[in-house]
Length: 199
Image (cartoon, rainbow, N blue to C red; front, side, top):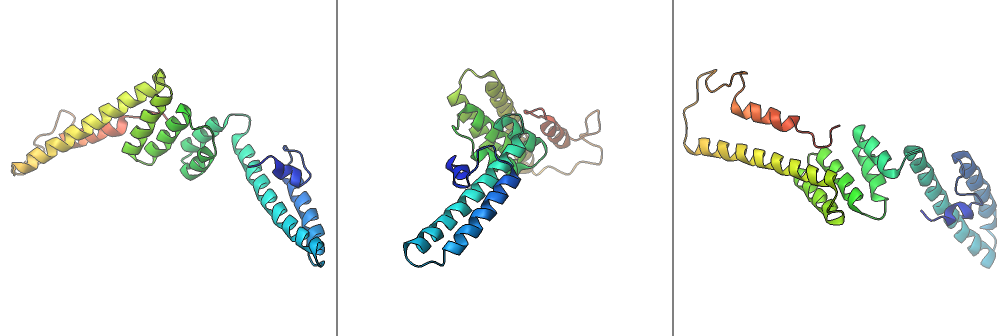
């Protein structure tokens, strides 16, 4: 949003929603009347109507963002939305953050992980590390993701090998561990138990 959006409506940049709506309504009525004048006056009024509509929309978006963020930072607001499983809202807020530094990529990785986009998530953590190679949080997260990928790859490999040998189906209860789980179920439970963001 451009800072001039509030100025176009004749407001300060900390204006309330009510102030923005009142200013927009007043200016809209004024320029709608002038719009029907002939010549340059009518043309200028039409341009101004378009300008105040864009400014109004920008201000409304900015106010919504301020309400979401509250007293914290934008990243804290994004993390809160992720915890609330409001991933689309979190993504919209994150998309507006500049510059896209290590923290930005790490937060993007978190959104991707919550969407179960594992490879995209891992790629974003790697990008975060290129921005901040000494960040221990990023490094530990990447290690956890690599371990998770390795255990899943091992499980898939074991399944392929057992299928390749055309093994006979086991009797019910055969191959169960002490806890009564087959190795596949136990592996899946372990994978689900891994939570690299500790939410």
